[in-house]
Length: 200
Picture 1 (cartoon, rainbow, N blue to C red):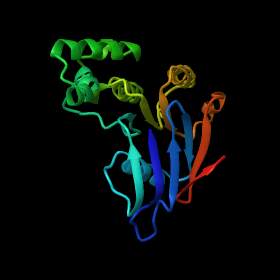
Picture 2 (spheres, one colour; picture 1 turned 30 degrees about the horizontal axis):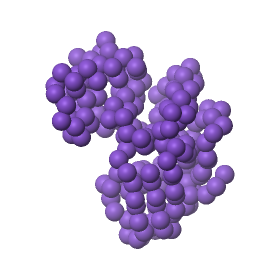
Picture 3 (cartoon, rainbow, N blue to C red; picture 1 turned 90 degrees about the horizontal axis):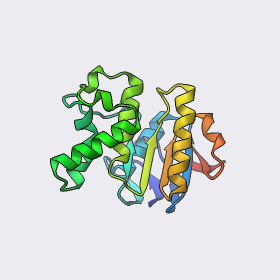
Picture 4 (cartoon, one colour; picture 1 turned 180 degrees about the vertical axis):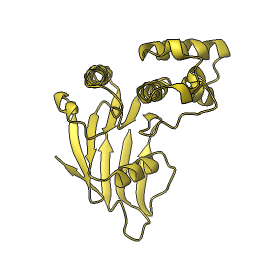
């Protein structure tokens, strides 16, 4: 699903140095980090926004939720959630909207479907961001700091949902320092520190 082999980046003092990570089908990996700069650089490489100076990045199709959302401010909530489907599928408009409503309902946002994202709260934007990551129903999901704007109850509820997704065979990479993830027992935990990924 994801293989990073001997990755180094091109800064004068490289943020990532000889970094390696393998994520196999069905695994749930929790990656903690010391530096947001290193974490964001890793996300850019996985998304191929940036190429490494050396090393190899191999990945299959994935859905991703970003820490900074990357929502389209000119579009309303339902147009944002169906956007990945518009790019990756040839579904009819009616089918797109049906799937969009289903995923908005899952995250308590159906009543906001016509609302511009600028009028959503941070927690609502976070839920929309995650719903958009899941709508293409990829076997591989990346969650970049997904709990940042959640209450404790919302965090615990979403962790149960993540665990259920993984039990159904979804491969999941979570980048987060939230200790609530410790309650998931069937995960591997690594740390991104000083440009490398280390076992915990």
